[in-house]
Amino acid sequence: MAAPATTSAQRAASAPARTPRPSRKRRVTVGSAALYTVAALAGLLWFVPLLWAFATSVKPEGETTVMPPSWFTPNATFEAYAQVLGRGDIIRWTMNSLITTTIVTALTLVVCVLAAYGFSRFDFRGRGWLFALVIGGILIPPQVLIVPQFVLMTQLGLVDTYWGVALPQVVAPVFVFILKRFFDAIPRDYEDAAKMDGAGPLLVLWSVILPLSRPILTAVGIFTFIGAWNNFLWPFIVINDPEMMTLPVGLGTVLGQYGIQYAQVMASAVLGALPLLVVYLLFQRHIVTGVAGAGIKG
Amino acid sequence: MTSQTSAPPPRTFAGTPPSAPRGLVDVRRRPTTWTGLWFVLPFLAFYALFLLWPSVVGLGYAFTDRSLAGGETSFVGMDNWRESLTDPDLYGSLWNTLWFTVLSVPLMVLLALGLALLTDHARRLGWFLRLSFFAPFVLPVAVMTLIWNWMYNPSLGLFNGTLERFGVAGPEWLFSEDTAMFSVVIATAWWQVGFNYLLYLAAMQSIPKDVYEAAAIDGAGVWQRIARITLPMLARTTALIAVLQLIGSLRVFEQIYLMTMGGPNFATRTVIQYIYDSGFVGLRVGLASSMAYIFMVLIIAASIAQFRLFSRKEG
Image (cartoon, rainbow over all chains, first blue to last red; front, side):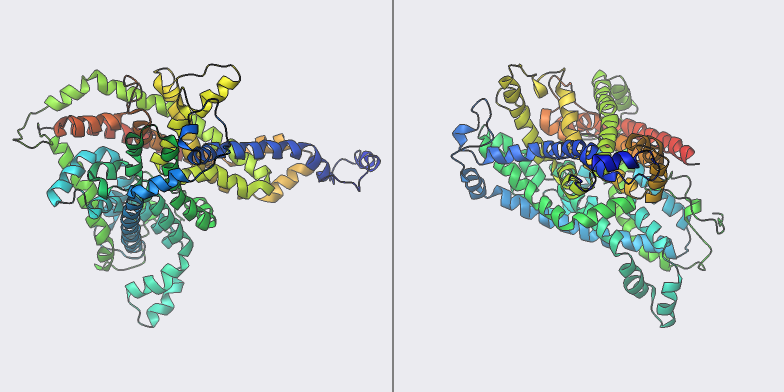
């Protein structure tokens, strides 16, 4: 990283000129070294909780509570993982999460895209106030509606079902707003050719608008997925049967079950973290650009 | 609905005030048909059934003594409202929620800004830093709380164990009324700051390079460039992040519930948990609904006030 070509004499010579500093390289050696050290340390520090969870999970159960804590054990073992997986709950919960999250994501995308397209491209009676109503919904915190929502679910017979978990989560006015804004920015000219060929509105949406909206659709899809996967409060309320619990809700009961078997508790945490960490690694680029483009928050 | 001519819609984000959709709806293009309504209908059906209906019914419940255990329900007038509004526990939980918000919003805005500045300058570590700062955001809340409860364990945890090595007696973390809220806020910041961080990072990377180059030619150092260019150009992003974080923080429930159950001695019980406790533990649907409404009004008022403040800054 040093700049051997430039001697200090040369630098001294170029210094008085001062203006278009060619001395970027000098800052690389001095300021940047400190900067990169701080950045690397901060990055590592942020990993400590996950690393510690992993370090604990591979210890034999007897070593987890030895003080002072040590990061490495000579007796590393995957025994805790075998125990947790052998019990089967966590696999069951992961499947439940996968099912409910898939329903939520698919329905949200379909329903919100249709609504955004309707608001963006058509005039119809009541559009103004309907759109205002939808946008106003962004302000309603769904958390305060848990009691009447639960009563509704009992009336519909949806308690302890996948649909009971999924359906209320489909209401995402923010996504209608974001998608509409994106559709609004697509020039009408693109659709004219398709219309000239006699395409109806659904076909126009499918063959013209959607292909142009891939980045925003990916972003909305990913954020719906993450939000639904990690939703805790609603599944926690609408599910009582341990067989039907989603991953976050099931893991919330782990501490009570495994008690002080910390290696197993941390093995469950690591297993619970894995699915979305993998999703994140696969979609990292889309997530970053999605946040940049939309400013979505679930 | 006035047709707002060809002026481009104001650049706004997710939080446009509901009262001003005019500029956003451009009415000129199509003759009135029913087609659009068919597209909007599925969403409206979900919206009506799962958001509007519970909102309306919940308001109704608030005037009854409805119980989750069933039994006869009768109209009780303002009783629930009177009970809620004079309930010191409700004010206690409101205070806890506010305290959490006051602690977490500045922390999570400034921390995000700091981490993003670091990443923006240490470009070669970009991939690693984005991974480490954002990855916790995708963790399910229960994973986060399992890990942090374990680290916070006063006698066996990583923190106090490490402090002990240096001869320092660590705090009780989640088990003391004095430190529980701070502990929850720190864990929350670690878990959720990644989203704000990405928003900042995206905004920083959209600042044109030549602005910096011009400043460098004028002899501005790194700190000057940050203070004179980066920060001013991030004002809008900061406002957005602050609004989103405020709304998010006011709605806090799950990580606190999983970390402390609202304890010790209710020192961390938030409003949402109190509503949950009243409705699902105390089974009093009516009372819980009145509290939910009081809280909803407060949250909406806070959001609107923020948006107002925010759009004034913009204009």
